[in-house]
Length: 161
Image 1 (cartoon, rainbow, N blue to C red):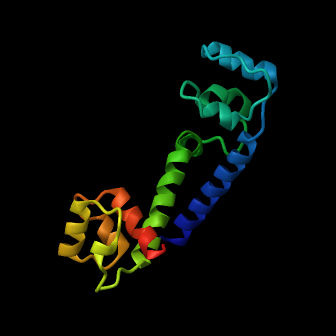
Image 2: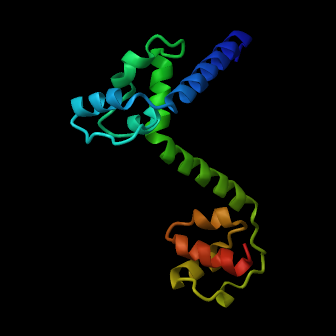
Image 3: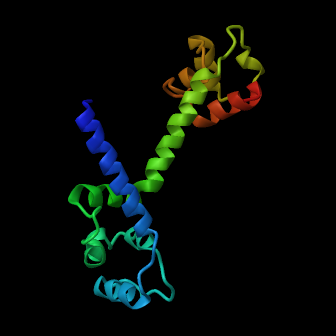
């Protein structure tokens, strides 16, 4: 990445951060309820952050354009990125957590002489496949076809995580 590209990226990140901060604020209740009513949504009884409102399936940042379009961060690219983060942030975080978990599992080694027969709670299929394939890490074991998540959990508990 060239320095110019890096600078553009840094500028975009700064704009996204400013937008995130402003969207944590709530609008006057009358304004919020006017937008909700226009979209057929139940009216709010209290002030709510714009980001919480945009998380609703029927609302988008475009519905709040009149309040934010004069801001320096209100560009098509930044608005799109903010909306993705708001609407899919939970899913994105869950996937990040899964990636971190897999990285941790990659480091968890299974001893070569591990006795799978001694592990109570493994499915018969899991025990047979583990004995036949002899995975060297928990991550490798979890990628074996036919191995259930419960087999991996039993193995982790037995190994003391």
